[in-house]
Image 1 (tube, rainbow, N blue to C red):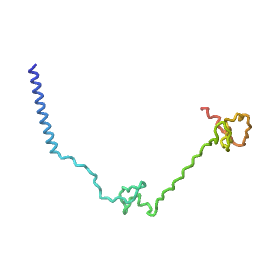
Image 2 (tube, rainbow, N blue to C red; image 1 turned 30 degrees about the horizontal axis):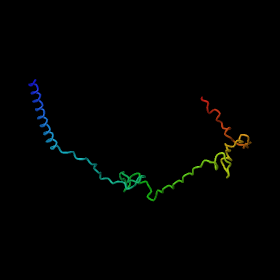
Image 3 (tube, rainbow, N blue to C red; image 1 turned 45 degrees about the vertical axis):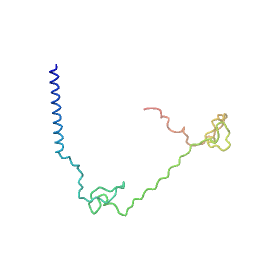
Image 4 (spheres, helix red, strand yellow; image 1 turned 90 degrees about the vertical axis):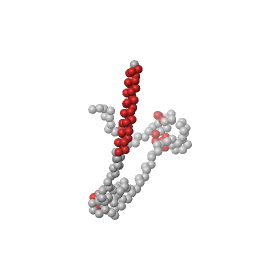
Length: 149
């Protein structure tokens, strides 16, 4: 058993020595190899268009005639883009509200009570309402709305 342990120990020592040798070789080789140079884009000797895009950045196209590309050469130099006027925001229609507390008589004219009626009024079901001639919601042709084909 001691003999086997001795052999394993010798084997480990030889492996460690080989490992050190290999590391030294790798370091030497890595020093010899030149590091790769960073590749930069080679700029061509072409003229860049002097026009601007709608974003406001410089046009990157090649000049064809003079100092403009095909797209910007057709553009009128006098034409100036005028900014569009800002649209005014639409005012929100405020929903009608009561001008009084529930179950109280309105002291001031309450438009909601006049148009829709006061729901807290116990005499409301007994009142007479005026029927205005014209198209009503009941005349809509949506009788077949819930039927499926």
